[in-house]
Length: 175
Image (cartoon, rainbow, N blue to C red):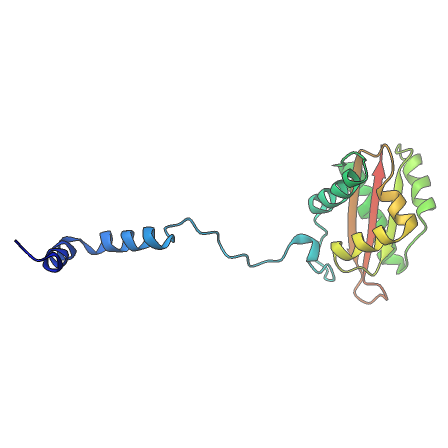
């Protein structure tokens, strides 16, 4: 009767190299079950201070909707018409190199068939997380994010490299 050690050696010798590799992978849990390493940061931390950078509207919608839900309000859907309006407002502010008043934007939106729309217009925030925090901490901007009855939104940024603020923001909420 062979010694146990010798039997192990014989069994080991009879295994093929691929079988050994597969066994090792299974034992160490690295047989394709691991999560790939993350190479990019979350969208709400992405720096928007470049010509090609765009705010992630879906991430913004999720963030603002969660905030609204925490305050007993409904979630929001992205509305292509409001996204387009936000893009126009952000671009206009970037071209003029200054933020505009929300009342003028609300009047334009009402004339364009969006009565009851509210707007947050700001400049200088380079990240969605910064803009959201700034709006949340400003009573006027916070009121807009918590507009009762709002169900739709649009958001956009525009970059003006030589300006004081560089990144201009427009958030529009509507019933």
